[in-house]
Length: 634
Image (tube, rainbow, N blue to C red; front, side, top):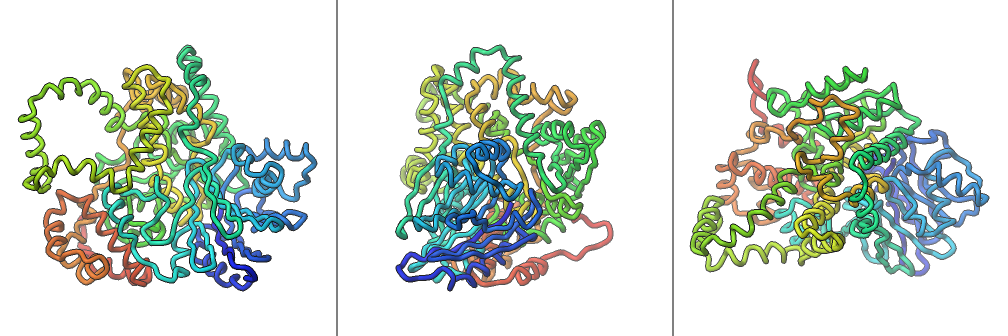
């Protein structure tokens, strides 16, 4: 797992070598992604750079950028390929001779032998730049669900690309906020999908499952994977026809195989164990194959209603695993907030990103370099009761709602809008809001949802089809900021986080399960809970989902003051009215998530567009810190 950067010169006669210092600077800005080795390679119009976090084949044979023996093909690679042994055997059968034992060389030779058809063969999390020196062709590629990041910036005759926005930003000739993207972020708190833009005008992302080929200086975009394409009517009908016990065994075997493959490492491995179902079942399965496994856990100090530590401790005690907890309180949360925003490259979508970064630091401090995490299980197996089960209930209520007199519906709408402080006196405001929301991203999220629902066109039950489509859409939309959180926070501590539930082979199995196996008649995530029951005590499996909530109001209260935003990014660069900000601060406890979003937007703007150093922003935040008294809450 690594970080990469590079430059492609698009005008005749330009040499990539002259931009080696630029690539070196970009690599230094993401050195946290790869502290073990660095490399720069250039020839003709291209210059590639790499920062390596050594996981497999720790020898110099794994150095990157990696060049094939002919000198024609070069790879700068960030990721892990879990089916590398299988592909290695097939390539060896074709006469390929390997010089290393790592997966990077497997990716390189797969691309040489199979071209871009190799992408469909890859089961892993990866992003890479691949250069064909003879054809003068550059490929920028990202894995199927976008676990690993990759961005690019076109400026003049240069195409610059890197694993993180912070590497590109200082090379941007005119970095400014993209106001359309800011409006989208303010509504969705998500810019990672379905658009390729960022908050900085001109910096764009390679999208999940996309290959960008740059030929003759021109970009050509193509998706080699889209979630709707994974839906298969034959596979769905086969699953529907199988006895449930048989299907549970098959899912268990698939998950076990994936976990076993993702434990392969030449460095120590652990798990991020929240105590919830997803991380617990991964930890239990992993414990069968690694007796040196360590489980890492975040506890919420002083708020037992948010704390799942007893469940995590129980599992580790039963499995004989080392257990390392981190107790998170408000003061440590605030102290890490600026660094977390800096790592994220965006204002924070999820406040618990701070916890992910702090526990990743603990993982690294304990000598563990690889950790398994449970992201993706909720989207695949129906874990969000507030979304999927509630939608199912709403479907049953719709016919009754249509019978409610129009005057009563209008009165209820007015009351709800008034309670939410929306301007209900505007003429027909209620009718304008829904299409306005859809217009903000040019209907792209709506079209994505519709394409996902249409993928299940063969499902006879309309209600099932609608919910299955929503779950599939969440693999792109809702999941993307969660993957940003996991990648940036773990790699910020030089730790590789693997996501077994998002292995492409398991994803294909899961999206072709009938809805009753997900949002089941008696339980959400029914089939995953049946699998988990074979590995975990019943009391750990069948309990209410807690998620990962934080006592956000208590922890951000020091910033809820009128002068927090004074003369800062929101006021001076975005033109926010001071009185409006003061009114929001006055209602902070009621609108705490809105305030937190603006707090992290202010931090982001100071770091990324106002030229403030991380140390300066940390000192500014510390100036709001209340004086610590013995026994006082944090």
